[in-house]
Image (cartoon, rainbow, N blue to C red; front, side):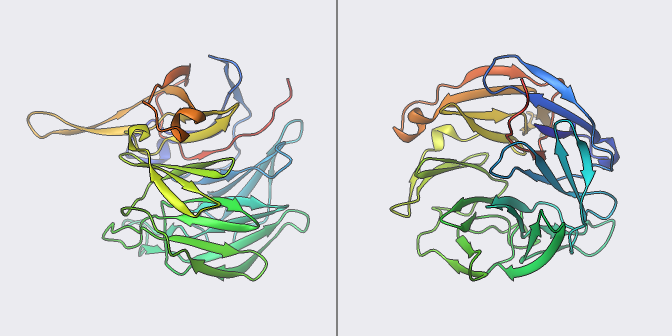
Length: 303
């Protein structure tokens, strides 16, 4: 499910609240769903609880504090606002609670920009946000995955000068303490997406792709599977990894820079990535329009 349609215009008001559903089981099965009834924003986030039957979206609305839930049959429901509005945040569920980690506030034309280290927890039963901790390093444009009731936060942009992190920060939800793994990414990385494939986390960016072994706590490079795009979606289903939309910056012979936005949805076998094979991507579907992908999640919909 992709929430919001961003064609890549510089004007944020051009982002629509449309919702697009792509079947990961059937090729070329793309349909629309009920639009989100609030203002969509750049770099919002979405995640799904273990039940897989509802999706939560954070970082939308006028002040980027709003949280919304969508469930088949019930439609959209506004939940309690986050304590701190944010964009470019990580968002994930652990058990029945949602966590947002890091992110950024402000834009040059709005207010002073600042990259965040704060972590908030949302209790779905109480409809309440609580500040529960901090990262060791502020970060945005990072990615996160869950393992053994801890949230692993990989890389991200660390400063406003666009310097990035190599670190893996681990937030323990039982102690609300963040530690840093001794093993780090081979290079600073940002604008990342990730999926967990068994005992491995696949972390993908424009120019880099790595596997992180959760048992051995070690990285392996798989750069032949790098996205060659920014602001794409990444999903895992039926032992295949799906790369959705995104954009690339193109510079012509005269130095003029343009952004090529794609409508392609393609997939590759997880086994090919783990076995370090050639990147053999296969077309799966076409989005209704070329799009930057911001808030997206994998969930189970009624047949």
